[in-house]
Length: 84
Image (tube, rainbow, N blue to C red; front, side, top):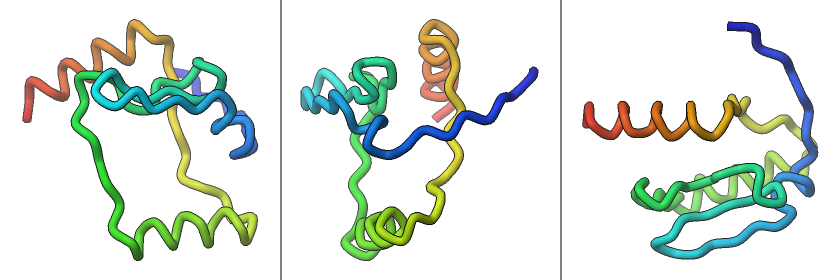
């Protein structure tokens, strides 16, 4: 698999952010499925949340995200869910 680095500013990732509760969360103007409807919600503790905010305000890079085409992401998530 060939991986290409694309640097995307946080403001672009959060553009079009929509939290539809049980129906999932999307961002990046609908191109990023942040939390699919079938995935349980993850909640940061206060310290973890504060560290993410600090990272962004200091212009440090966030974690690397690997993006794949939607169908492959769904299949991968289903396989991981079955293993839990």
